[in-house]
Length: 500
Image (cartoon, rainbow, N blue to C red; front, side, top):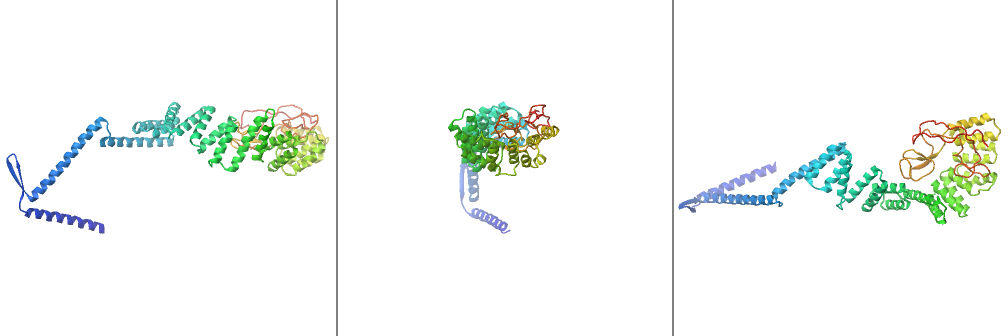
């Protein structure tokens, strides 16, 4: 209210001053005489002031018109003027509106509409760094890969947008299945933006698929350096890569340097079962059984696994069954109630022909978690105790339809793998395999091929470990108990008619 009152007072003061000035001019004698074409004009004081103000206004208007004329001539000549800036501003406004409409169409999934609006924005704005990315994304959504590729290639010419172009072409190559070119582009993208987490993960996955273990370890080190990977996870995955490298080297005749890589993998992650088994075998080859025992005990304490027992059995391949039972006892005491411990102890006792103790070792396992391995061991116990053939065959029949127990499963897609590997063969995920029981129905076998092989003798070897005591004769193919979620139907080996 005070501000309104103040404005009224100022306005009244100005009117009063103008009225006072006009009154003074009217009372002032004299004036201005102007002669035009022989005619003399006499102007009073007030008239002279008004004429002077009018002359000033006309002069200002003339100068403005003259400036407009020169601006028009420069505009027609192509120079930047106020007129050109005016029209540019209008075109820019329409371009940004078209760009906004294109982004909205992208957000709702209307690829064709987004592409047309992006092309309109490109026409108005004429700024490739701003519109080419939208054009590329709209073209990809509309299925026009050629136009999207052209837009990404245009982005490569500018250093500020080069990374976006390389990443876009990389993703196109991935969708086309050209993983080798995609890996090379991912390396270039990572060189441009070392801290970009998506590119780091993509490159690591592609390097693992290509078995470029040295490059993958460098990428993993970059993730640690840039802070996109915790140190604990880095140690685990670095061990996985070191293990993968050593497994590739140990596929042929192992040299001491190659055995050292396996030992290094175990040092990086002592609880990684494949690394522990491989490192133990490396120490066995070097004639250092104590080191192998220490590694296997530490890994067994973290997670009992058949591969660890295989490696433990290889330390003394020529021992008698009784000696083997005694030697295994310190290992089995680490996890006495674990299912794997029960199975290993039962098999060792079967080898030593202590069938009642083997039955006690299994305990309630055949009722609580029956699988092909436990049921086949139970059949061996019945056979060893002189049980009826019908009873033995009953256990083997149950083993035919029983699950195979814990296996290497991918945590991402639940695909079952016969052996551990760093990359899932189904979904290409890196370091996602874990040893556990499948949640879905599976195909099973009672051949005993998945059973732990822990003994020596003249019996045939089963699987990839030492010789086993159970050698079922092949009879009939096993029957599936449910759909296999990971691939086409298949059958395993069959249950035997007799246990030798």
